[in-house]
Image (cartoon, rainbow, N blue to C red):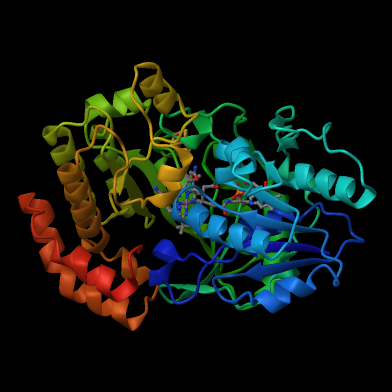
Length: 479
Ligand code: B12
Ligand code: SF4
């Protein structure tokens, strides 16, 4: 049997009534050998008692998979891995963005026996077969594992074509994962990977990251059927692609196909590039809207034209508001992702980011919380900083931190506290939290903090951050 564990960490999902389904684990399991039983254990919703773990060898557990993104989720996964080690469970296989960037470290630290880099479907299937047959894994691309005192890093993984997945095993999920999005019940799906862009801070600029590849529209509709079979009440889906709109024709075909295959389904895209969206005519935007698209998330990151150019964002921030207006007019709500704490960011740059965020809200859009930039090793920007002599945070530093508090060495403690206060203010400045029909404490916090948050952003006044203290009291340290 193969066990797949979702780490016990909610993060921003704490604000939602229900966490979103462990999608990475479902995809990772998609090509596993049919004769191997698989079980998903979601540690956000289930407790893992020591006695249960001790029984695993008798139950024929062949390996234990963990997924994590860098940051607090990886920290939670590491805690689980350590406990499993103490109880003698294993072998431990890590996958996900954190293992992709930090695979050798995980193996070196003894947290993983195997780390899967990049697309996991084929690599995991090959590894599971090798473990079953007692074969060495050295010829499986995309792996890291211990070899004597060293860590073996096998060949880069082949970019994976999603259409090789004939069915997604959503039946592995044992909880009701539909979360509220306004009056809708939402699931999640991934229809493409990668991006033609190479923004210097993005994980896609790290080595071994393949370019954009998207599944055909019919595949998307079929996989929605898989998801719907497990969660029949679903009437909305979040496409969590890095860049859903890289192929304009594909996006339009999906919008044309879905109403006939899934009448009434609405959808959101979690990833879009400004320049790809700008390529759609007004009539095409209307077609996307008719096809069910109700929101797009766009990575803009900064309001400073100088920093935008340095990050490799094709368009100046000045183009953002025009696109926000066009999308909002078409009935598609834009959500603009923003960051702070970039290298070389001045007070004026930061002011421009905050003001851009406020303008987006005024134009009917939403903004992400203004995240503190984390320099992930391996990205173009982090490599450049490192070559210039900047001592970057290690994987451990990143895993110990939060995404609201900068770990960058060029950020002073005082500045980090200011950026954390900006993060908090931007979290409450618009109505994004209400979309997820949040828990009562989160709703009350929003109601109480919205006027103060807006005032702070407008006046750039971030001293005495009582909201951060209040949230820490309500939700614990990491929210
Ligand atoms: C949904 C999502 C979230 C959700 C998380 C929901 C959840 N269930 O955990 C929420 C909204 C909470 C969230 C929060 C954040 N996110 Co986020 N998120 C995503 C998003 C859009 C989709 C993730 C996903 O499901 N992908 C689909 C799956 C199938 O892909 P995958 O995870 O890579 O899995 C594949 C392989 O990695 C591998 N694999 C994965 N797990 C396993 C396990 C095993 C055992 C094996 C063998 C293989 C394997 O196989 C899978 C199939 O190929 C991604 C972007 C993206 N397109 O991936 C960003 C992304 C993961 N987030 C990112 C970031 C930075 C954040 C935030 C810090 C905020 C921010 N600045 O955006 C926070 C904090 C997260 C944290 N550290 O705790 C970065 C991560 C960078 C990194 N190095 O980790 C990404 C890549 C976005 C980006 N372009 O920057 N996020
Ligand atoms: S547009 Fe978005 S997904 Fe594409 S490289 Fe830039 S940050 Fe990454």
